[in-house]
Amino acid sequence: MTTVRDLQSMAGAEPITMLTAYDAVTAAIVEEAGVDVVLVGDSMGNAVLGHEDTLPVTVDEMAAHVGAVSRGTEEALVVADMPFLSVGADESESIRNCGRMLKEAGANAVKLESGPHTIELTERLTELGIPVMAHLGLTPQSVNQTGYTQQATDREEAEEMLELARAHEEAGAFALVLEHVPANLAAQVTEALDIPTIGIGAGGDCDGQVLVFTDVVGLAESSPPFAEQFGDVRSEMASAVGDYVDAVESDAFPAEEHADSESELDDIY
Ligand code: KIV
Image (cartoon, rainbow, N blue to C red):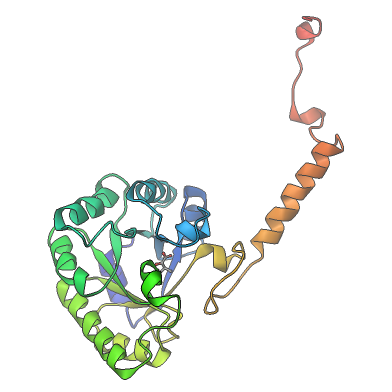
């Protein structure tokens, strides 16, 4: 099984691959393809649950989906993304919510959208045996304050981000996601830290890359500009379902081989 220590030894030596998954079937495909870290992102809010953004995702929903992903994987590190307001307001509640992901759902670590308010919590969770992946830059749970635009684009914000990155490393975070920040800033943060950085829209100098599953396979209706579509699963699914509808409507399905009959039941009515 991949551990947080394995990831740390990969930093700078070989690229770390991380991808989201929200169910057991997808997680198994993702793992079989060789992905090191499966993130049960709260992106499931907009990627698969039909919400406008990530804010409505609940702790119960996250635990259920993390459970499914854990059951679908054997080797990959499974990271539970803590939903909006599930951490930060109250320490005991934050610890309980994070603990559920490991105790109840089978995650190996949690990810927190990070800021000054998550430094102490990162330290406490790490002390308690809950590995923490930090996340800086564009943090979609703050959409109402920042929108989805690139973050840390001026010197002051960039310096602040570097300081926050260092503070989370010191607090015990085992990795750091950098989302939608200038590539030259991500490169310097990566250089400054010992823990691996995992970029999304942050250029090629991070220690690893993460994307959202539905963007990668071409299932999403729309994707952010920094995502790359490596397949066209949406068309493939639409075509299969269309063929099924046509087959039922034209009486081509089911055929004889799709059901059995019992001769003694021919005249019960
Ligand atoms: O929720 C998510 O999928 C994420 C990744 C995009 C990093 O936070």
